[in-house]
Image 1 (tube, protein in one colour):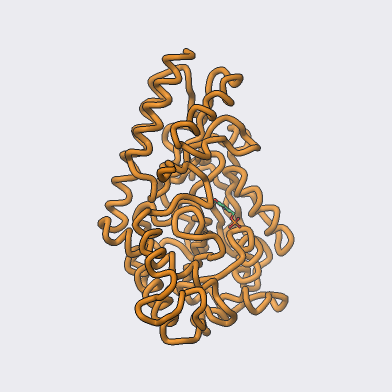
Image 2 (tube, rainbow, N blue to C red; image 1 turned 90 degrees about the vertical axis):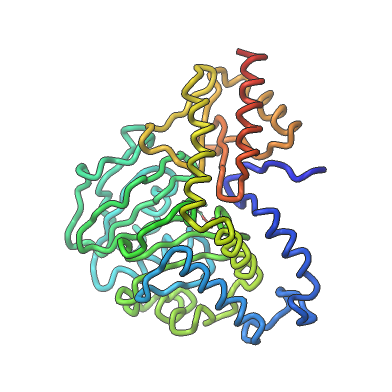
Length: 360
Ligand SMILES: *Cc1c(COP(=O)(O)O)cnc(C)c1O
């Protein structure tokens, strides 16, 4: 079977060249006589893989020197607890912006550790938009302001960095990290699971300003204490070595594509193909406000839901996989992360047109 166009929301498609390189290096990494999976995390080979991955990530995102880059575990759901444990810094409450399913999960989990102030919510708008910044009721004494920069399920993305004054801005960037340039200095902390736009599941990226760490709650597990991990180069315990290696290959691939500006242009072109078509027909629809549509996850509905199964079956026959929408919202969802080539989106739009011509 040829490589399919995989529209999975995560774990998601990886660049084919990365997979080929990993296959070539599987049994013998650079003459070491070992697979990366078999290396000691404290050996010179893996230390070099780890250091290169960190340095490439710093370069791609232009991470300022006063930020720590941590390679952790526990996923973004783990971070929903790890963030308040580390970031309350003696304060009693944190502000959260509610833009959909992933924000709701963050809010619920943070509630175990602090008072959560939902400073704005898109609930009444059916989670179809980002609440306008001037409607946010922020608390100047909050420990931080938490946003989800891209709602993977709802397909709502921030196309601006909110100004929240002196309170640190914390972002769950699981599903749009590295899709475009970001001014890291505007954030106190950025986190994300790797399995959407970076690499294999099991690795969590944390980028945190160094003055914000070192005041974790006493109950914080050592492995989840940012300061302890930073002081140990993310090797307080065994890190997810193979996932870090693959992430490094992906960072190299992004660099070779021209970095994050090139990624953004590529991602905008792909998303425009899909949204322009969705807007041109009544057969399909996008539920998200135009200004806040995600470049990464494109949910859409068929006007006649009874055709959903036939649509998915035809897509699979054409090697287009995982287009079924999240169970909580139904319909379809095309996730078109960095690794999705524009040919995949063209093939999808061509199929959507063909399906409409037959059933419309
Ligand atoms: C996938 C995802 C999560 C969940 O991540 P895990 O790695 O499964 O813990 C959280 N937030 C966002 C925005 C996501 O896309």
